[in-house]
Amino acid sequence: TSHTSEGTTPWPADLAAEFRAKGYWEDRALGSYILDTADRLPDKIAIVDGELRLTYADIANRMDAGAERLLQLGLRADDRVMVQLPNGWQFALLTLACFRAGIIPVMALPAHRQYELSFLSELSEARAIAVPDTIKDFDHQAMAEDLVSTIPSLEIILVSGAANPMNVGLEELLAPGKDPKGARARLDGLAPSPDSPALFLLSGGTTGLPKLITRTHNDYAYNIKASSVPTGVTEDTVYLGTLPASHNFPLACPGILGILFAGGRMVMLPSPEPRKAFAAIEREKVTLSTAVPAVAQRWIEYQEETGGTQLASLEVIQVGGSRLPDEIARKVKPVLGATLQQVFGMAEGLINTTRLDDPEDVICTTQGRPVSEADEIRIVDESGNDLPDGVAGSILTRGPYTPRGYYRAPEANARAFTPDGWYASGDIVERRPDGNLIVQGRDKDMINRGGEKISAEEIESLVYRIEDITMAAAVAMPDPVLGEKLCLYITVKPGTEVTLEQIQKMLRETGVAAFKIPEHLVVVDELPATKVGKINKKELRADIAERLATAS
Ligand code: J2J
Image 1 (cartoon, protein in one colour):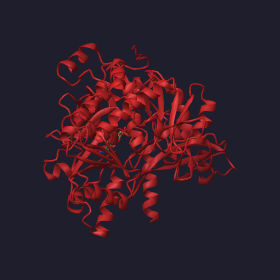
Image 2: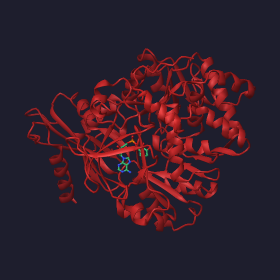
Image 3: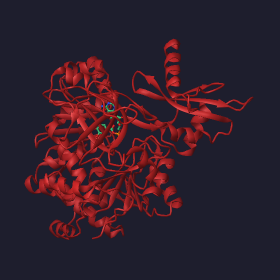
Image 4: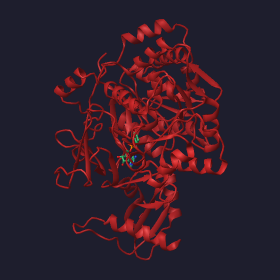
């Protein structure tokens, strides 16, 4: 089959050759790794979701049957499918079926609404969208039907739960097939090129519009394998996944895919709520889980309150997505009884982790070091000069699982990537002499709300839909639970009034994901400017921090 890599930026040919020679890239499609595990451990339980327990033979069969049914629906290799599903076996199997058929899942978030989903569907030219029927009274199926009526490329709706007659039920699509051997042989013949995109991840983003990150079979397989090593994933690993699985961290660092590659057991829960999560850990004898700092903190508080023994089996808890305060890091081992692994990663590639046998000081005060010897890192000043260890600067990175550009985004690429392929994540990082990194801050215009990323520019451009707003600046305000929340500063036309409720209502009606909606408003006469005439956000961040401190 021929695969287009239109809109993507390949690695230079000499480097690609080197990655192959060194064995980082194995030239295999992602689905094939699951078949290996299934051949080795057919009867072992792979996925636990509530009462449902699927063996490796089951998931291999369902993956292939699902891939063939996707093709029978008229989808073809290189077509894109928007995936907006909660954590559950359907998410895992639809993703695998797409990999197998060379269909590209676009990893939307459960919180996304019309605004984000229509933008992403248009950008990716998605032909199908997979949604749950309803979650917490929100009718995802009706939203998908609206999207299909407005987005020309979208035709097919896949629904987990109660599908309307015109739509395709995911549980049937992913049911076991009658001829697993035949399906496997047919799909082996259609295997996607290992250099073609396997999936599109969403960028945390700093520019006005969300960006898509194309991850190839080769690079993502290496991402999964390389990140499985420092976390110590084996056949005996029992992994509890509670964060939305479409995030790179719980999906592939090592996450769901790392567990399934290694032959471990994946326990899926749709929420990290401690009562349910702890019960699942106890019941399934979970050894590994992943949290953002806010969730780790909730688990610590819950454990301190209840003092139970439910976590006895838990060996390792990975924490990342936003900066884990050192004081909370120090409580993880004593309270939860599990070794903390800090993870500083990004959907654009580079993953850093602390190692399980690192000294306590490294585990509790750093965000670790790269998972691969092939990850290159530079810490540079504003002019791009390399800085010595111990001095914080902007991090640049390259490597075999860090792509060279966003999908169809030449302008964003010019800003985020240097001509020789270094990705600038916008994080301000100090490298210690022992190689461990400490994330000190960032120079990107983003709000990190408990690990969910919000582009300031995206929200600012939306709020101008309210005509009385003359200037707007979205900034991070400190929050004891989430680390940061979105605070909006505005100026308004003389004699007019704009309220937080009005802005929130407008954004909800626009179909913006709830986590991006401003939670605090400050109306000012004038926004402070920098010397070059940009809005001085540093001053605004200090201002809101001070207002909150004096108010409490
Ligand atoms: C401070 N900031 C962090 C950390 C990410 C593993 C873990 C996380 C992500 C992720 C991921 C941080 N301390 N420990 O993809 O594989 C902030 C940085 C970074 C941005 C990336 C993974 N861990 N961050 O969070 O693509 O600002 O990936 O550049 O969502 O999160 O966001 P995202």
